[in-house]
Amino acid sequence: MYLNTIAPAEGATKARRRVGRGIGSGLGKTAGRGHKGQKSRAGGFHKVGFEGGQMPMYRRLPKRGFTSLTRRFVGEVTLSDLNKLPVDTVDLLALKQAGLLGELITSAKVVATGEISRKVTLSGIMASAGARAAIEAAGGSVAE
Image 1: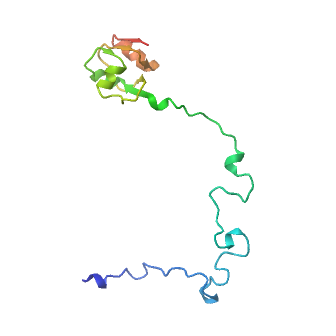
Image 2: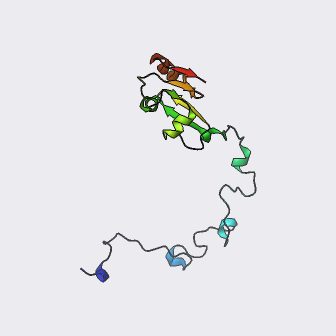
């Protein structure tokens, strides 16, 4: 076998469409663009969402919702993460030193994922209702 003899399998490739090459091609005269209008002309394309000058759908619909700009600065810690920490009093600095939170995080919240079996005291950290119950059941406390 030589590189210059390699060819695709029979019927695997299809001849490309040659538009505007006469009646016999099936795509002569208007070349499949129809008659008149912006899309029939050279350079006659427009941006996505353009509706011919009519007020576009994305501007007609009301905008709802809210994206908090501070959300990316709130960290999330699980109960199983707390269980592995070597300290008994957990605050933001302890979580950052343990590598559980990034440097830019300004506040944190404990969520009830996993289990906790030792006594820990949270200070300056929020906790979900389930996480608070699990920490208090293990003999710990939450002081926000």
